[in-house]
Length: 254
Image (cartoon, one colour):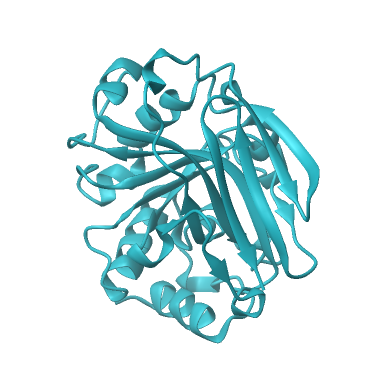
């Protein structure tokens, strides 16, 4: 295992901010995904339980200084049912994201993929919440390849109940509202995700993440991206992602 993966794993174990990796830092996005795969192997997550897609909205790309989306693998410990409780102290400066997620029913090989092909591979669709961590200092100094190697802020998450009849819903028009501590703090629509949530899945199939991990596999869960900017939390609270026609996902940080 290389020095970059070792540094990322050590920062995670110590629950501290990941410092720039200096000479060990990956130099390109492809190298970042290669380091990410090393991290996955060290965590026993080959194949991964799924993926998260970050920066699928223009707002998030501007927020992070990225030219497009980026993805990170997800371990089985991140795939939790709606209603799960977490300890706030177990995270580094945690935040939450209001997401739509899917579970794949068939493999998607790494390579070009249309929205229709992506939709055909989906077995279930549901509301979801991703827990992210503000575990970086200056993102410009850290560099996009290192951000990718460290799974683009990912920490954990929950998924809601699958929605029957989702194929008949205009997912681009669906509005999601994000509640923290009983208050609506943000909202957005499915079209924020590259124009349509399943465009994000199609992007993932053709991404450096898919190539690094040998494609997407049946049974994997994918967080397709947040319809809002991340909401950074000040302390323990309850969080609810509520999507029109899709139901809700919720979690509690204690």
